[in-house]
View 1: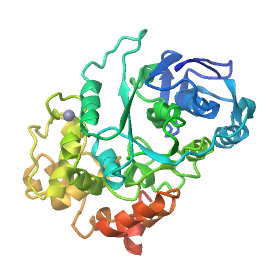
View 2 (view 1 turned 135 degrees about the vertical axis):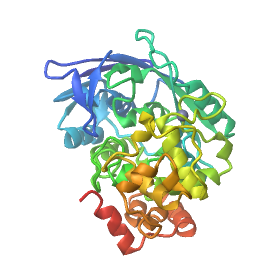
View 3 (view 1 turned 30 degrees about the horizontal axis):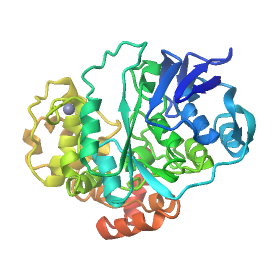
Length: 401
Ligand SMILES: [Zn+2]
């Protein structure tokens, strides 16, 4: 793979051994559509390691043996690429980047990142906003990146909005991040200007420890995307921007409760479709409504009927990503047996006791937060959720086995 930057415009060229269809760190196949993209709202004089890691968040799935950058990287970043991916990076000559002091939050506006923001009320936000690609038609016009960016602006926090068309580098499965970490490409390029020493993400217990989303669905202490000792954790740390997961030890029930109790409550938005408010009919709206109803102890409020595909998705036989929150909802939503979710009761014997672990913090998640941010998160969780008991922590560690 050959990578070159023209300002903040990234172009890459595959080597003969590279492949058009590669795999992201979560194992998901991704097919390349176009080998160029741009990042807006960032400086063009960042440390070369930052350019390298930002580029790697886009090109990693398609790179097999080596990556040639247009400017020399440090030995530290080259080592992380070698150890993490078996890829030889060149040229290697730069001094490592000095780690800064500021923690920024990669802010999407969803409940999880609002919860992370509630733990660090002074942290600046970096918001990724999808922009159209000049050479790829946008078949995803319902995706309202403008609405999300406006909500981020209204939080009143120090905010840098990065615009990028990098999601259009993917032909399949659809436009999206080649690696989950591509959401941070802009934040990486801003790291010198913002004096960043860490970047916080809203990934919660399910994503970090339960192999959630499109991943493994089992206990994942060595999660390659989010563990500090995983390939991505080591690479970000090598560039002086270690990954920080303030809510990595708590479930989406906790992040939802924190977000709804936060001063940013009015700006929380997980739906990518609605303009005046969430659309209430997409799969994400339903999933979050299940969690919110459970947290607020009220009946499910949805216009959807049980025959809709977005509902049937949550009625299928486990395992699937997010099933712990369906179970949580079944145990706590009043009248759930008469709701569209009733069919899911066949698959779970959920009780408040059996799902109580989802209201506390998994202690190893605190231990892996880098200093100086470990202490404030630990104090917050001790005060707010309390720690899981050893028996509850075993629910995490036996997940999927
Ligand atoms: Zn929606």
